Image (cartoon, rainbow, N blue to C red; front, side, top):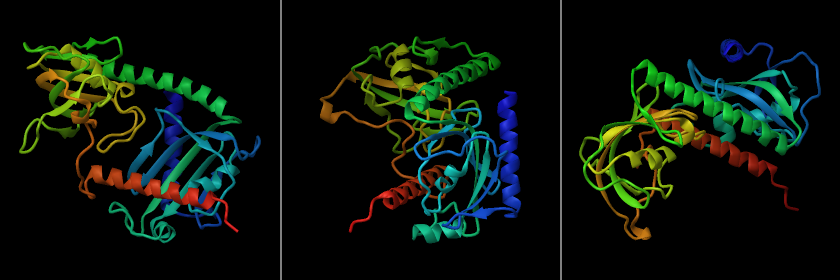
Length: 336
């Protein structure tokens, strides 16, 4: 914990310095601002190698993303291209280095040739901080290290859920797969089981904050969510935990991130975020023919307001996708 806190403090200090002034920053060929903090020891990263890095991303006074206390990023190193992206500086870094990268919103708009997402203003700065904790020569080494980090992440998630339950004196059953279930009322109808179609009302909350990110419990047009259990139409924690109920049952599922959305950032909640679902089993029936089964996962709205937190998250994801597409286009060989 001390190491994580130290890294986080250091990253925050770097971001704070960058947000105040551009003094001492250099520019890439595309005009991207960057500043490297290095002791000059060790070899510079080469094309084909991978950086293992802790990442902070900040917009104004808000942290948009942080890998600290969670899974670090594994970043491939390639020949730098002038595409106005942090990828331009990765080949300049060594193990132990830190770098601050500043993207100016108006420059980003010119480079992308379009409108800025609603949550960005023309004079905004998007500030990234990368702390290189290791350097790997091959994909195999990356996968081995990532497996170890994923195991650590699972352990943190389980510990966080169990600490929350203990702190709040919540008595929950733990399934063999790792979902924590509180059965308020088991129900007295047909049993929920794999292959059955179930109709669920639920309220999804981030854990431990309790912030609601989606609910179909009340309101006009909020029909029960229906799906066939055990067919991967929902997160693993639902397929697992709902088997504790029958029709008419009510309760709560406390789901570690590895049994929820894992590293996926979804509208309303972050990567590696533990979740809580208050649920009611409205009905349990035989499954319909496959073509009639409803797909989808809770947490994906039918539409969104671009100025809402969910909309901003989706627009930010779209912006990152556009940057990746631009990078891929730059990497394609020219036709002669």
